[in-house]
Amino acid sequence: MKNENGSARPSLAISIIGLIAIIGVIVVGIKLNFGTQMAVFCGAVVAVIVAMLLGEKWPDIQDLLVEQINGVTVANIIIIEVGILVGIWLIGGALPTLIHFGLGVISPSAIVPLTFVLCAFTSLCTGTSYGSAATMGLAMLGIGLNMGINPALLAGAIVSGAYFGDKMSPMSDTTNVAPAMSGTDLYSHINSMLYTTVPAAVVVLILYTVMGMNAAANVDVDISDVAMLQAKLAEHFNISFICVIPMLLVIVLSILKVPAIIAMGGTAIVSVIFAVATQGAPLSDIMGAAFNGYSSNTGVALIDTILNRGGAKSMVGTVYLVMFASIMSAAMKKSGILDIVIDKGVRPVIRSARSLVIVTMLESYLVLLLTGNQTMAIIIPGQTFADTFDEYDVHRKVCSRCLEDAGTIACAVVPWSSAALYMSGVLDVSPLAYAPYTLLTFVVPVFSMICAFTGFGMWNSKGEPMWKKARSAK
Image 1 (cartoon, rainbow, N blue to C red):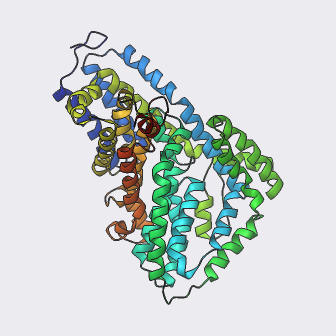
Image 2 (cartoon, rainbow, N blue to C red):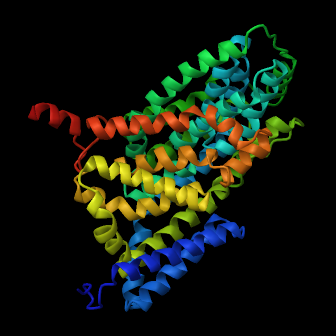
Image 3 (tube, rainbow, N blue to C red):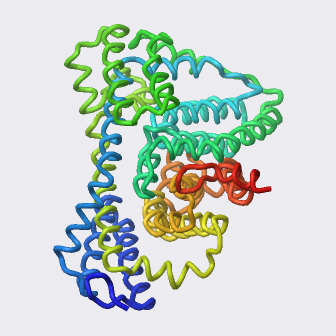
């Protein structure tokens, strides 16, 4: 058989070899500390070489490459706007306000569930699991240790909370990369994840409450550290719930389904006004934070670590990552190796939307185990199966959800992953020790399977709920 340009379609063996070469280069790049962006760029270069060796002409590859990059332009604009918003929210006191009041609800009998909730809230607002664990997480760990709570249990609650926000926040890079790789939009992706992640979080919170009440029996809490952190925040910011209004605006606009670019851009303008009104910040400083990120100098390492972030520049790496992944995707599609592997190697085991969900998540887990990198666990399966969801009349927001339900949420419990190494280093708890307590990692996939097998939280390509059609058919 031949491709549309007349070149012969590669065999299954050749296609597998080509994929192994591409993925192998990425894995080696990651292991050699090239950084995820450059590792993917190297993979893209190999993908182009493979396509040309299989008879594809560069002008044809370039045309598809440009088309693929154009397809993720909206996602890249949103990613840049996210960085701008975080910078403005920091200098405008929104995030400091949330941290201040969050620290004020510490209770000995509820330290474990509060750790989960506060880390989830911090990561949801900032979009960073690393920052949430290194700041709010580390603070809660210190308080819990002083109470005699099992550090592995605390670390598990910290990681679960950190990755709840990493998975759900529109500020998170993975939350933007997953829909970009699956061919859907940000809000649809987040809406889809509500059906698996929110009920899972409720179950996890109940479990942590029970576990925490048992662990916190007969202990007292020293609130001096908490009081010091709150005092420092109040010293450098005007703490008020009014500061949080711009953050609530994003939620309202998303519920109203305002296009993400307009919603983010409009919220940025409102956030500037609030930063001037509530903090008296000079407009030049606000613009500097919007582009370069906010620079905190409170003198308290825990506070400065979380507040020194944001800005459009902070998102450049994610923009490059999406672009390089698009180049790699274009080359693999043009050569046909992805289609061949799916048609001859994977399709025989996919017989329904249900099995498609399972296979997508399994590949995400496999890539995560091989590479130890959560971004690769999103990019590679996303590129592999996005078109297949169309063929089985399943909306692509289900595809993007599968990638996060597996690749994002499980990365910190794979001992050799960069995420696990980071969490272990920050919290000083072994991944093997905290993994059994990282409950969100294990509960989310359960709800993914419930959705797949019942049809609840599943949609066809037109966005119509599958469970309603199945019920009406009965």
